[in-house]
Image 1 (tube, rainbow, N blue to C red):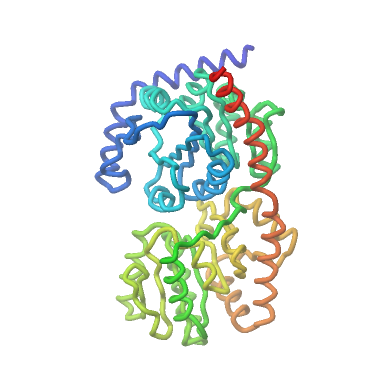
Image 2: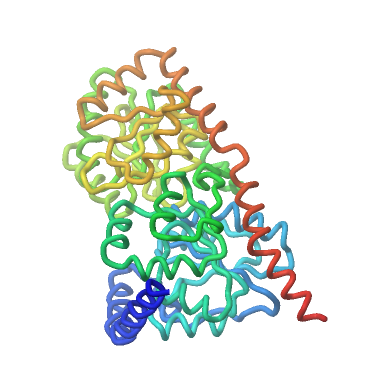
Length: 448
């Protein structure tokens, strides 16, 4: 009781602070609109002002902050739309990149809005308008106002693919344990993405009865492609046939220097080489193109539909939402965001699902659990490299040894299928039993 009272006191301080900061946050949002980081016509959604009418009937709110979490949510959203057709579904995201990709992937009838900032006014306005019957958050979206106000209104909360970084865990443990303990007690269901994450939530005093393990949703890879995407990918596949090809995906600033240096070395031995670079952020694509053009190297841009004709070419993918489809075009994939201190890696499951020989760096954050699981099953499934020399050596080996490349690709795909089996069904059963059944009972009682 004492801890709960202390947690409530800390929350009240947080609530008043965020209330006082609301005008500054609105100015910050306008600045982000100016910088192109918020939607110019829909930024007001971030302060709880809707741009769509709310349909009648029960509504489930899914929230994913960015693209990675959004892609993990999509299979569950599809299951919900298919298995519970009487429910309205609202999906919110925070980042522009998530919106641009997910708007084409959401099932028909699913509504999209940008998530409100965590101020009392924005959260109150959002919840009063949309009146969700359940709130389903992805991964690490633990916002005090959102959680506490939802709980006060009697809205059941779920945290899917729950995770907490080491940094966040240390912060909550050292500085705000009563608050996080209070917040976690408001959840009806927490589904951590690994046993390590489950232990962290238990150490932060989440009730053990609400923690249920089902596996990492990022292993659930769906390959729904439009006819246009299929035609575009097939055309690119034809251009890449009989060439030495490798791809560097989710590349962050600073990593392009390593990749381009390795490309220059590889092209001496393999003149027909094509290096595909998929930057994590589109701004980096223009920087890479400028650098290559200054050196007089061959470069082609995906957005301009430029053909792969020259030898020793770098193909820069400056489009959004195509990465998982492009993995099928390359036998070797390097997953970036993993070479420099401070980086936290990216999801390797899409590359393994496509049967690529997967390489990544050592700065992989919470994705270390995924890499460890795969390496435990088969050490050939994913290989970590550190810097230019090790990357260069690994690529030379794969290009020169066809048997090794085949073994690595087979290990990658088989390990993925082993680890991904049944995850979506387990997550859906937990969500259906612990949350959605409660909505059905409430709706039936309303009719009576």
